[in-house]
Image (cartoon, rainbow, N blue to C red; front, side):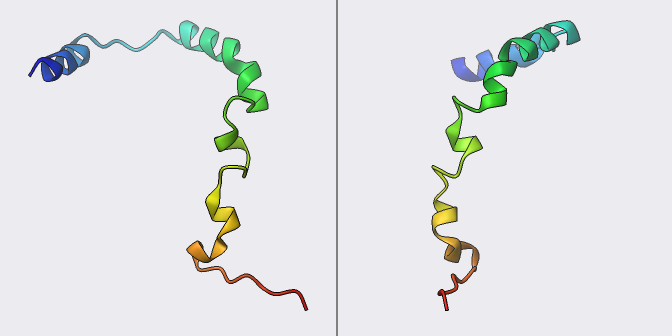
Length: 65
């Protein structure tokens, strides 16, 4: 119940950030977002098992002729 009460209080008192504050945050994080350096799992295929296993998607690998 305490966690539910906390969640309900968060909903009751929520107010979105002003647009100026959102823009400020976006500008401060822009350098990291552009390089993807801190989120390789989103910006590369290094962590993508699907690219290594296309049969998971029903794609058959062709053998070189």
